[in-house]
Image (cartoon, rainbow, N blue to C red; front, top):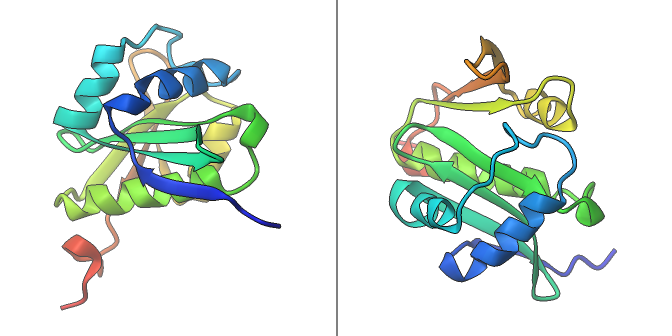
Length: 153
């Protein structure tokens, strides 16, 4: 298989594509509320960082991590591009960056019984109860031998 995908850091010019990918996902709507372009931009530029996967110049998946609170704010893959490893690539880049920010524990919320829940469990996340909105809360603790920036001492 010839993988033409590119993983790169997201920027404000990607917001329309990020919104398109988010709207295309049918499950795990995350309290089904509209996320404004300004909110996405704030997470990309102030609170954290984002990444996108591009295929032939089009954004087909994205992830955004909030370094201020150690939260996986979003990770979405366009349904037409699922099962190609894009979610895992985004997840790993985001988690590595969040660890490099000195965080010791990350958290996220997702709906029960979804593919997202299974994805995070398979990636090593531990169930931590329910959020006030009734979503499943998960945490990921920094491995004890992991150092900031991923360099051994």
